Length: 191
Image (cartoon, rainbow, N blue to C red):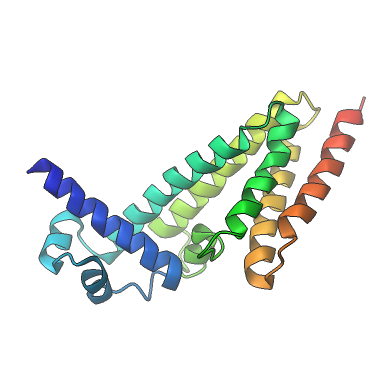
């Protein structure tokens, strides 16, 4: 019985995540979630109090899965510098994947006005994890100001995502990687 409950919850979250990523939170109504998932409304409400709870849980799971994927792929580089540059290679592969619609966290945060809304808080947490990862790599380089480098890298990552999605710029990740190379050269050449 526990497995069936878990399967139902997973199905709801998987469907909600797909709907949110394709159409946004506001477009993911409970009727569409019921229709698309094949899960009865009553079953959905057994697991979640409301649509906002479903969206928050789906985005939290996406954050965990996306960060694990991103770190695993980026960490295939041997040195901290290679891992930093590899972040942009990983982004490029994501940009070229079927169904790429930009960053789910930027997209959903843009739908919510209140900075204290759970969706905005999840987006902020996601970006903080990305910043923490960049800082971890920057600290391994033994540069003078790793926190500055990490923040600059985050801006490059976010800018590449935005340019790729909004502008349809297929070279955004490559361009950001070129800038990152210059930044790394400059950071490593400082006395």
